[in-house]
Image 1 (cartoon, rainbow, N blue to C red):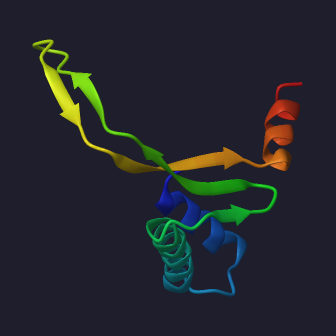
Image 2: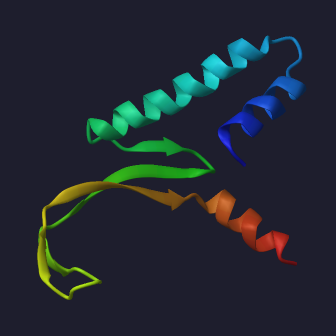
Length: 95
């Protein structure tokens, strides 16, 4: 599902809201999660999962075309860990 599909689905299920309001709500939610991660905070959505930031140390990599050694700087990357309820629903869906 992409962002526009999420907005359309939420608009259909909440016809008392204008679509522009649903768009603003979804954008605000994503912006707040992004800002919290940029500050190094953890964001937990109970039953769904938790977003956090992990540090990747600097390392020496390889250019796949030439095989030449390349220095890769340290960086921070977003990380998502699924919640127990979501994992259980995914495994129950297979049955």
